[in-house]
Length: 117
Length: 110
Image (tube, rainbow over all chains, first blue to last red):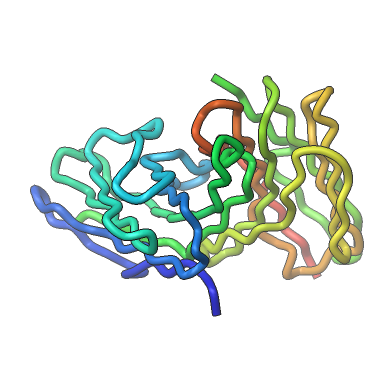
């Protein structure tokens, strides 16, 4: 089945440690996104990528890094510079039809819950 | 930046009741989506509705883009409808990013 796979479902980070969250999609979508959700809140955009080898910062990019070496994959690294990483992280993807790509619906994975030890 | 406000923030219904959720946004948008987040955190697409009206079973949605609001109707509610409903909009010329409202938390009692 086509979809978006995030792994792991649960992740624990020690102080000073970098961790990487995986996001893979087989929907043949060009655009991919990372969002963060804090308890009782809506989602906020961390990074997004319209095409391979290109990505842009979202609203809360500090302390995070991404790469987009393959169309199917958009991993997110939570670095030690992110002082409050405990949150629910959701990856999404959409088609990107040139200049109209912003009006395509986004589809979400099941998320990764990150906690600090 | 664009503001997205959802109302009510919380809603408790008896099974079988109908409800209307509202989403107001402060500027023109390229895209509007309604999502249901279940208790396990999964975010389920309900509607992609930048304008007009759509129906899917017991759910329907209407967006009036010129007046900058959208409504989600839930009829004959069931306990499985419980969860948080989010409205999200994509402003023009901002790379497709979605701006989410704070959500409406719905609890349907048997």
